[in-house]
Length: 65
Image (cartoon, rainbow, N blue to C red; front, top):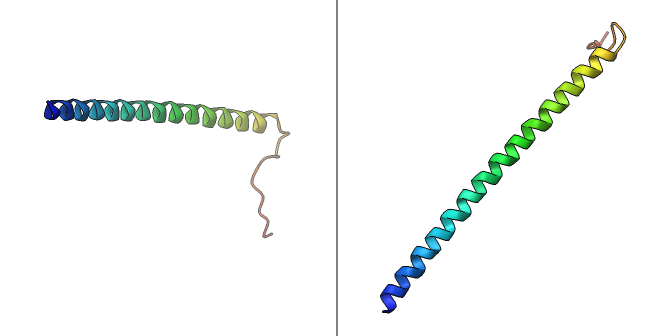
């Protein structure tokens, strides 16, 4: 009987580990999607800020000259 109980515990542990790994992957995917959303918002904000500047401003400047 102890062999069956040990086998059952082992299977339950493996199932729990599999579930935990699946949840971790799902959380990483959500985090990556959120990060992509933040990057998109920042890029849009930068483009809007450039569009609002007067002509000639917002360009790169040669600091050596």
